[in-house]
Amino acid sequence: MERKQVLVPEADLARQRDFEEKIRAMFAAREAHPVACVDTFGCQQNVADGQKLMGMLGECGFTFTDDPKEADLVILNTCAVREHAEQRVFGNLGLLTHTKKENPEQVIALCGCMAQEERVSKRVRESYRHVDLVFGPHALWKFPELLWQVYETRRRVFAVDDEHGTIAEGIPVVREKGVKAWVSIMYGCNNFCSYCIVPYVRGRERSRDPQCVLREVRELVESGYKDITLLGQNVNSYGNDLGLGYDFSDLLADIDKIPGEYLIRFMSSHPKDATKKLFDTMARCAHVAKQLHLPFQSGNDRVLREMNRRYTREQYLDLVRYAKSVMPGLVLTSDVIIGFPGETEAEAMDTVSLVDEVGFDALFTFIYSPRPGTKAASMPDPATRAEKQKWFDKLLEVQNAKSAALHAAYIGKTVRVLVDGESDDADFPLSSRTEGNRLVRLKGDKSLIGQFVDVTVTGSNTWALYGQPVQ
Ligand code: SAM
Ligand code: SF4
Ligand code: F3S
Image 1 (cartoon, rainbow, N blue to C red):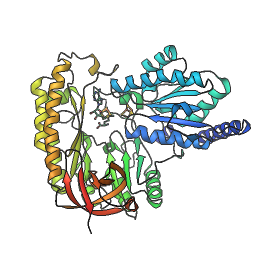
Image 2 (image 1 turned 135 degrees about the horizontal axis):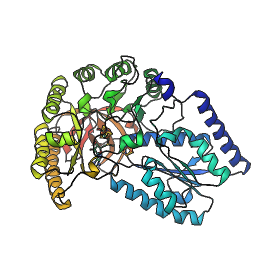
Image 3 (image 1 turned 90 degrees about the vertical axis):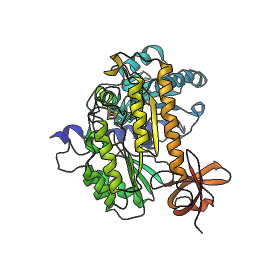
Image 4 (image 1 turned 120 degrees about the vertical axis):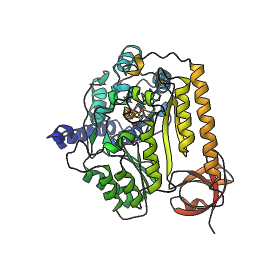
């Protein structure tokens, strides 16, 4: 029953293909070769959505440019997670008044998480009148129809209704060339961490059918992708809505059976749903990278409670101990927020001490940014920006020393890497990643790109390792 409501019916998707055909025919009749610029901000889920937009645009006959001045259609695919990200988008939208002045036929679209915020769509409606199309993540699959409406009516189109969300299978995708690919296995979030906007803009959790995920991964492996990342806001709750008695560990184990030379990664994992079964499965499956992104956000139990994270510091540390015990050499990364409303210096230092205790390979660190509409945005927030910055700097100091020491310990060792492209360092012209996703700058020839290679590590700093292929 549930699935019927969530899956977009095939007939509706076929209608979208008709709109793609109409747009293609319209440009063919004008003997025009339309060009689009798709600018994506935010997380990998948004990158994956951007690749779907490009897939649909490809079907409409568009080619692509990075320069908005050259484009007939400019799309800003936005992120709402922090205020700074939003300000950048409003800045970019402002600049597009100039490109539109040069080319009045240019169509400008705003989509992604910001577009789904009522506050934002209202502001764009009133103050950014050069924007022709605004649509949120829920309307992504209807993009061909919305674009056709803009071309046909020359009116502004807004598709930003609040809904729980759907799943649309079979949308074409334009992937980056190379070895890396993203596969969304679920959409939305049910967790409502009190600081976070994502559940409000991405709807409720819904998991893709396991067979659809398996088919997509198999096709990627067969077409030469070697570094495949499964995406969801909390992959650990994959399958909860399917009622199949099939969870994320089961999915990983089934993917692992696909033959070939490739690595599977995933993000993000919520600690409240991380299980021993997951870590045992990771340890057992040869294709699953021994790398875990397990955001802890705060090392203080009161702050964790206020954040609605639903685990304690001790429970987090237990998980990490178990994961490391079954996967020696596990590469562990995390997300942290400093300056949550009401956080004291002592509480922030609990976060710093957790970082010191665990020894993460890398951290994604953020200063709290109030998001209107979330619970935390209305909590008293007495600490000053300068105080928060001081705590943040302390955190970075501890983490940078850890990263540098962990990296230095690699020197003299041999590691297996996947060479994924060129680097900007003339002495180490190749860029590669270890199984744990550590960046290794490499001596060697371009012909190694796309291959797994054994490398001797010869140097390191806080951010990267340096090495050369084993002779
Ligand atoms: N679903 C993922 C999870 O729970 O691990 C995280 C997704 S969120 C897009 C990425 C990170 O942004 C979060 O882990 C959190 O550290 C950070 N973040 C989210 N809301 C924030 C806010 N209001 N201010 C600062 N950082 C925030
Ligand atoms: Fe945001 Fe929490 Fe959901 Fe992650 S789990 S997307 S931090 S609400
Ligand atoms: Fe991702 Fe930003 Fe949306 S982090 S889910 S693009 S709010």
